[in-house]
Amino acid sequence: MITEYDAIIIGAGAAGMMCAIEAGKRGRKVLLVDHSKKIGEKIRISGGGRCNFTNLNTHASKFLSQNPKFVKSALSQYTQNDFINLIKKYEIKFHEKKLGQLFCDHSAQQIVEMLIKECELANVTFKKEFKVADIDKDKDQYIVSTTDEIYSAQSLIIATGGLSVPKIGATPFGYEIAKKFDLDVLETLPALVPLTFDEQLLKMCKELTGLSVEAIVSFNKVLFQEGMLFTHRGLSGPSILQISSYWKLGDNIKINLSPKENVFKLLENKKNLNPKEEITNIIGDILPKRLAHIICHENKVTGNISELSNKILKQLSHAINTWTINPTGSEGYRTAEVTLGGVNTKELSSQTMMSNKHKGLFFIGEVVDVTGHLGGYNFQWAWSSGYVAGQYA
Image: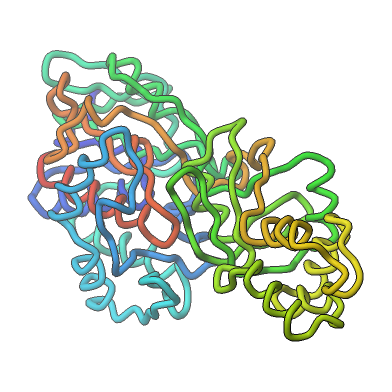
């Protein structure tokens, strides 16, 4: 016995639910399935439980992909303002935190409930704890089998996400389906993830655990100026998470611990105006005291500024304005917010998210090689790509 639908969506996260809503609105008979007990877990736990659901500054330049132009069509078909209007319709209160980041005032659960309600209004059929045993194609129908049931549909939408946050059920399922249908899948890596370091630097990070500073973190020509956090495992905070999406293993990153100050010029002036001042106290006025003490100690710099040569002052200022370090790796998918890489965008239509090889087969959300910056961009990609697929599935 085969149960027939017009569209089957695998993965009831942000992209999957948005797609189901839109396809259902078109009068399509939609089945939305998920392997977990709870719907929309990644939404619920995101943003410290408040969900950074979009960003006012959404633009194609905020996304990484082998084809950077791929995101333009979906982002223009369903914008951040469209999602904001949906939030307002449900009277969910929200606020801008910084840099255009929008968060719920109360709880991310409100967004999950809103999406479930929209699915119900669109007559979407939900099935939780749904374990796919096999997927095949028979003529123009996609056949989805479990151990005891078979379903078919003209359209199959893969919205299974990436490998980030395995504790809530992340799997490589979406990539396996893409490969089964002979689609190219690019190498995947953890992104928006804290970086780790060798023992010497880790010792310093442990001593400074909990300390946060405003910093410019750069890799090649890419830079981010946001908070940076020392942890007992290495470096984290927004600026580090952002650069992790660009950084390549084996390469250095540069950190400016005092973005507003040219430290060497300041030290030259201090030497002329106040030669008796102690160097640790001067650096302690620029940086948090604990960090200032460690940097002076690491660079073996002590005493009055008048006793220090310009060469030593230059070396010290470089350690602050252009601190160059070599990460040994990252904390991996366990703490990564998203997955870099995935289904090659060359395989998909940017207008519809449908496979160029297989009519009716769609890939949306994080499973695709599109990775947003930190700050609500990845959710916006989920809403936009899900919306677009829902118009055609």
